[in-house]
Image (cartoon, rainbow, N blue to C red; front, top):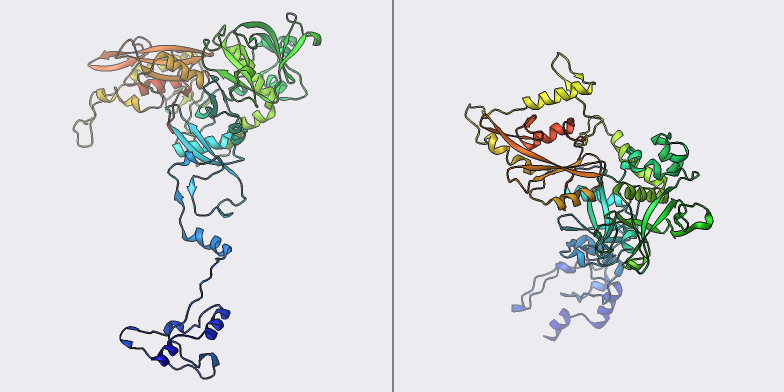
Length: 544
C-alpha cells in the first residue's frame, strides 16, 4: 500500500523540477488513473534515455500562476467577449461610450481620439443620442442625422442651439465644432434638428437681405453696385462696408428700451451718442464680434418688454445662462432684423461662410450622370413646356405660359372610375383617394393652428416660396395654403367644388380645379398662377 502511494504521488523534489520547467510533460494527458476499484490503465513504457522519467507517475500537479499577465488579458478579452449595447446611453458621461465593451483599447479608437455624447431633439419632442468625435462639425452631425432618420438630403438641414430659459436660439454654423458649442451651453440648453432655408439664401438673393439705405457703400455709389460685388465687399477683409440704422437697445438692469443709431463694422457694433454722427468721438462700443454670437429671441415681446416683435440679441460665448450679459436689440421690421443678423455672420466668419455654402454645390456638380438626382424644385429647372406639336418647346412668353397653365389646370382630371387589368372597378375610388392622399405628404400638417404655422415658417427661414398646407379652422371641408413671400407670411384658402358628381379643389374660385391637393401643389410648383410666387420649399417637421 505504501509502495503504491509512493508511485502515485510525486516527491517534493520532482514537483520542484516540474515547477521550474513551468509546464507538465507533453505525454501527461495519456496517463489515466482510476481510484475507484483500484483499476489502472497501462501506459506505454517510457524511453530509457530519459532519466527524469525513470519513475512512472500516474498524475502530476499543474502549476497555476497567481498573477495573470495583463498584456495577454488585453489581447484575449476583447476578442472573446462581445460588446454589449448600453440601454441607457444618455446616462453616460460626456467622455463615455454608449457601448459597454469589456476593455477600451486603441483598436476601438485608432487615434485615441476623444468622443462625446450629444443629444439632439426634433420638433416633435423626440430625442436621439449620438456619439461623435471631438472634431465633428455641425454639417457632419446633420449628415449623420439625415442618414439615421432617412430624410431627404439637402443643404437646408441645420443644428440649432436652443436656450429655453433665455428664450433665444441660433443656427450653428456648418463649420463649427459641436463639442465646443456644447461646452458653452448650460444644462437646460439643447440642440434642435430642423431645416433652415435662409441659412445661405443671402448668397443667392443678396439684394433682398441688404437694403440700400442700410448699407453704407450702396449710398455712396447711388445703388449701382451689382449683387455679386455687394457680397464681395462683405467677404473681402480689405473692404470696409458697414450696416447703419436705428435699433432699440435694452438698458442694462432695466425694462426700458432706448432708440439709438447703430453702426455694425468688422471691429464691432457701435452706437452714436449724438444723433447719426459717425465721428469717432461720438461712437461707443456696444459689443465685439470675435467672442460673441447673434441669437434670435423667440419668446415674443412679453419676457423682455420689447417695443416690437423683431428682437435679437448678442450673447458672449462665455455667458451660459445669465441674461444680464445679453445685449438685447430690437428692429423695426423683419427685413431690418435679418439684415443686421446676416451682416453680423458675414463680418465674423467672412469667406468661411462662402466655403460652407459651396460644399453642397460642388457635391451636386460632381455627381455622376448615372446617379439619381436629388429631388428638389427650383425655378431654374422647372419651365413651361408645350407638347402640342411633334416636338416639345419651351414657352418663353409669360402671357402664353400663364394661359397654357390655366388650360392645363382645366384638363387635369381623373375619370370617375379606375379600371384594372380585368376591367372591373378598382376598390380605391378616386373620390375617396383625393380626400386622404395628401396626408402622406411632408408639406401637409393636419389640424395645426395659424400661430403654429407662423412659428414653423419663421423657424425654417421665411424665404420666398416656403409653404405648407393644413386643415382650415373655419371650414371643415376646406384647406389652407400658408406661403412666405418677401419675408411675409400669407394664407390662401383652398375650397372644394363639385362638378359632375366629383369633388375638386381650387385656389381661384373654381377657375383652376384639381382632383387632389398633390396635383394642386405640383401645379403651383411649376406655375405661379394667382399666388405671389411659386411653391419652392416644403416646410417639414422631421421625427428622429
